[in-house]
Amino acid sequence: MEEMPRKSAAELEAECLRLLAMDPHTRGIKRVEIIRMYPKGTGPNWSYGALDPMPTRAGVAIAQTLIASVYGRWALAD
Image (cartoon, rainbow, N blue to C red; front, side):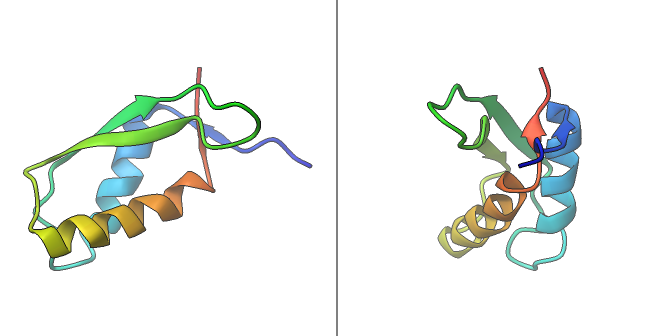
């Protein structure tokens, strides 16, 4: 299996913001905190921490779904 392409934290944040901007519930989000993780096995090596500004409850659920779509495409670069 091929290794997952890598992006910097800034590039991952930009991709998340690009997706979030497409939905009316999340388009006001200006910052996504990218957090490095150290998974056992082959899971994603990053997650997100804070959204700024924090969206509504519905917006949080939508943001989680949109950001999850990025997990499987790119790994956080070293």
